[in-house]
Each structure stands twice: as structure tokens, then as C-alpha cells.
Length: 173
Length: 227
Ligand SMILES: Nc1ncnc2c1ncn2[C@@H]1O[C@H](COP(=O)(O)OP(=O)(O)O)[C@@H](O)[C@H]1O
Ligand SMILES: [Mg+2]
Image 1 (cartoon, rainbow over the protein chains, first blue to last red):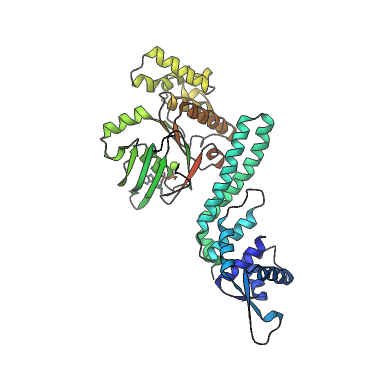
Image 2 (cartoon, chains in turn blue, cyan):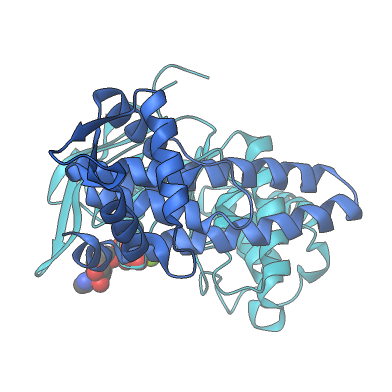
């Protein structure tokens, strides 16, 4: 899911060929999860079908000579995805990291992404705190486990907020 | 709920030398709500709390409480307001070391003219409510950190303030004691209908609030304050 938004978002700064898109993705988000070409082309085919990208063909057409450009509908989709906080759950970092980096790359407010996510996390933490204080020892222990994990996410959000300037300097072209 | 905020900070600015501690900070506190002020260390949370409570005067901007302009009052009017309507809980050191715990809690009542016996009876009730009924005769130096904070909460609430200001009330406690202080503090505040302005950098503490406001570089990002 986040891969297709990430690819779409990368097109906001200008049209790209498939292989270029893969390389940019790997440089920006890759690390231990670089993409296969096949994944890029199948994702582009789906985005094309949904009207979120369009193809600019070049002279001497072959499959590799296709340049993908984002459409207005695509930009709206990316904005909507970046702005919408994720449901709090463990192992969220890669999606959040993608959103923060994309926001920086496309000139959106990355602090807003972090704040919206913090609000969503705290909402769930409040609910768990209420449940724990109204419940028995078992509720207390179960809720505490979830609360400590959510707190760890929030610390990551806090640290990321404090490092946004450095991250921006690294990811901006 | 009324349709007027109880306490409003409007575009506060305050510098300490070169440091912009508050830089156009605004905040609204509604009657009876619990608001967590979050944000990184040095972002201006304590300064904002002190301005809201009339302890510090902003260089520009306004603080109003119940429709009255706090920033335009005389010092003595402001201290009278603090004694009558506000309660305070800080991270540590706010109890008078020479007095017993029950005398500490009774102090605000004595200062506003209550008789000794009545003040002590009310103070003892508050200590029991915060599950520290057994430390009344001890001095603050003889009780644990968690017990001391619960005594401080009792003292903050004993005169039934409309706003309690709490700056890192669990900052010096381990998580188990911190949780207990928060649970009893917030339950008691809700019972009395006091609003709470709670400065904390800990999310598990902030989770006792109704909503959060994030302070960053002397400004507040306030979410969903309108009712
Ligand atoms: N009395 C003071 N004198 C000089 N600088 C101060 C004083 N109080 C606060 N500051 C500075 O103002 C900024 C905000 O401080 P503070 O409100 O205590 O932040 P927080 O409570 O969020 O940690 C910090 O940079 C701090 O160093
Ligand atoms: Mg502080």
C-alpha cells in the first residue's frame, strides 16, 4: 500500500521512467527493502488504470521508453494519504517514515503529519487508560503493554520532529 | 459546559534575553477540562503555565480568567486570585518541610481564615482520598516521593480551585508511582470540577487528559479546542 503511494509521490517532482523511479525509491526509502522492476511496472499499470498517472511516450518506443507523470487525481490521492493519520499499531514506522519523507520531498508540512499521528496515538492511549483504570488487574496489565508500545511510537515521532531539518537536508534533491 | 473558555492566553510573547520563550502563544482552557501541554524540553511549556497562572507577566498579549484580564491586574489582585481560584502541583519541593503533611494540606485553608480543627479535618479527608491518610503526622522529609506528590495534590485541591496547574507532577517518580498519582489526581479533579493544565513530556501521563496542546518553539498547536 505505502509503496504505491510512495512511487506516486515521487512523481510529484516531475515525470520519470520506470527504472529511474525504482532507483529513486531505493535511494529514498530502500535500505533493506529495495523494489523489483516487476513491482514498479505492475504498480504503474494499476495507477494508470485508476487514472492516477499518465504515460508520456518518447520517440523510439519500447516498454522502457515510457515516462510516467502524476495526474491531478494522483496528487489529490497523495495529499489525502499523507494527511490521514495511520491507525496506531506496532511496526508502523516504515509507513510513517515514508509519509514524513514524502511530505518533505513534496513541500508539504511534515510537522503536521507528525502532529496528526500523535493525536491519533494519544486518542487510543486515552481509551486504554480509561479501560485500565475502570478494569481489574488483568485489564491493567494488558492495557499497560499496549500503552508502553504506543509510548515508544510517540517517542519516535518526537525524535523525528526534532530531526526534521536534518532529514529534509538529506532527502531534498 | 458553558460556552466560554475559563482561561485564555492570547498571543503571548515573552523573551529571556535572546531566548524567545513564548512567541505568539495562544491557548484556551474550558471549565472542568484536563489539558496536557506537551512538547520538547525548552519549548516554553513551563513559561506558558506560569503566564496562565499569573506568576509571570508576558511582555505582550493577554491572559484572561473568567472574563477578567489577568495581565492588567495589580500584583496583589493577581495573588488573591491565585490563592482563591488556583491550585498548584510541581515536580518537587513545594511542601513546607517544617510542617507535618496534614498541616501542609491544611495551610491553604488556614490562610483563607478557616479554624484549625476544621482545616485539619478537611485536610485529613483529602489525604485519605489520595490514599495517604497514614502520613498526616509525618513531615515531608519522612515520606516517599510518591506519597509526597499525593500530599501535594491534596494541598492543591483542598481549597476547591477552579484550575489546577501541574508542571511535570510525576517527573521525579517511577512509572508505578507516577500512574497512581495521576489516577488519584485526575479522579479527584474531575470530582471537584476543576480544570487541569498538565505539563508533561510523558505520553502515558498525557493520556489522563481530555486533549493535548503541543508547544513548539514558544508556540502552541492546539487541536479541537472549540466546543
Ligand atoms: N528564568 C529564565 N531565565 C532565562 N531563560 C529562561 C528562564 N526560564 C526559561 N528560560 C528559557 O526559555 C525557554 C523555555 O523554557 P521553559 O518554559 O522552561 O521550557 P519547558 O518547560 O518547555 O522545558 C528555554 O530556552 C529556557 O532555557
Ligand atoms: Mg518545564
